[in-house]
Amino acid sequence: MVGSYERGDRAVTVQRLSELADFYGVPVSALMPDSEVPVATEAPAKLIIDLEALAQVSAERAGPLARYAATIQSQRGDYNGKVLSIRQEDLRTLAVIYDTSAGQLADELVGWGVLDPAARRGIPDNQ
Image (cartoon, rainbow, N blue to C red; front, side):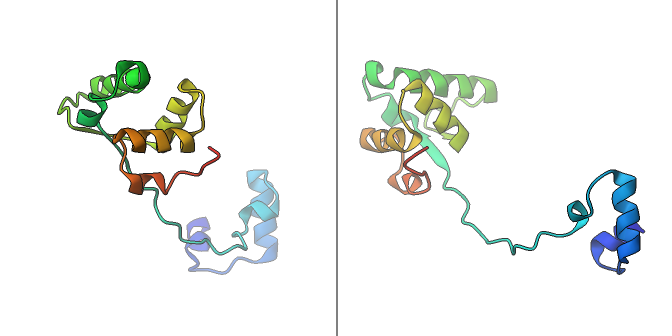
């Protein structure tokens, strides 16, 4: 019966909704749909690190990123050596290592030729 309520196949009465809330130990509002209409957002651009370009950057500047990339490659068993996709969370972690924001690090990676400028547009400056 709950499944038919969830699918909208069946209307739920206020009384039944109250009983379900009591049964699950939650407020009635937790069983109600959100009043906000979800807004479609553009998926974040993939962050593709150009490993060949990274190899051309001095080890002093690129060392932490190179080690991070090597660790990810090892975990994935991915040794093609050309590119590596990373998540935005990885970029935030790297920003902590570089003691900067994710946006500033992304700008630096674009400057090194390691990150596509198009990917930079999806990264907020203050992260």
